[in-house]
Image 1 (tube, helix red, strand yellow):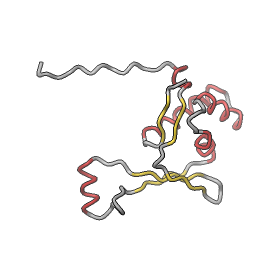
Image 2 (cartoon, one colour):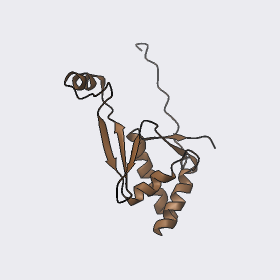
Image 3 (cartoon, one colour):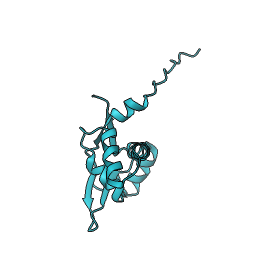
Image 4 (tube, rainbow, N blue to C red):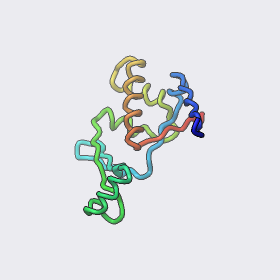
Length: 131
C-alpha cells in the first residue's frame, strides 16, 4: 500500500541439504589452546551502531577495533571446531563425533547441528552450500 515490497520468505532447507552444508571458520577469529588442550576463541563483539558509538566514546575500542569476546570450548566443542575446514560437511563432522563419543548417529547430528547453529549465530562460522 505504501510502496513496501513484500519480502519473500526464504525456503527452508531439508534435513539432507542442511547436513550437506560445509561450515567455514570466520577469519577474524583468534584461536588459542589452553594447557588442557581446549580451544579458546576470541572474536569481535558485534554491536548496534548506537552502542558502538558509546563504546568508542568511553574508550572500549582499542586501536580502532571493537571489544573482543571470548568463548572457551569443551572437549566436544573443540573436536567439532578442529574438524571445521570448509571441506567437511556437517554430516561427516557428526559421524566423527558419533564414533568418538560412541553415541547414535541421529543424536550426534542433532547435537552437532545445534552447536554449529550457535557458532553461526555468534558469527564465528558460515556455511557453504556448494556440494
